[in-house]
Length: 125
Image (cartoon, rainbow, N blue to C red; front, side):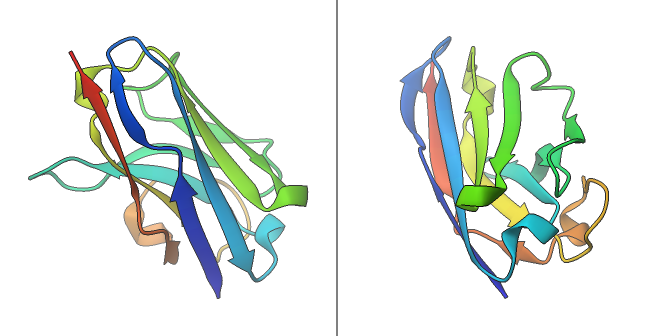
């Protein structure tokens, strides 16, 4: 089992930056591909970013490319999402997730086995 806890959300203005953190505990964190997803009210959960177990491979959704960066620190059991130039349409609850399959990157919610409780990000215009 892997336990995930997100932090770093908040209320910001358009153009501001936030860094989300995901703290992992339980089984060996460095074995797991990880990802960030978000869910806005009335919408399905959508993919934001994913990173391989080593951090060597990353994938970003088109909507966040050039603005968001995903990274991880396996020594600290942490994953991060640096969000720059935030837009009102980025408003959502952001979730971190871990996949029990140890290779590659994962972009579908169905490919993830462990989820955090989410952290709210609100971007005002």
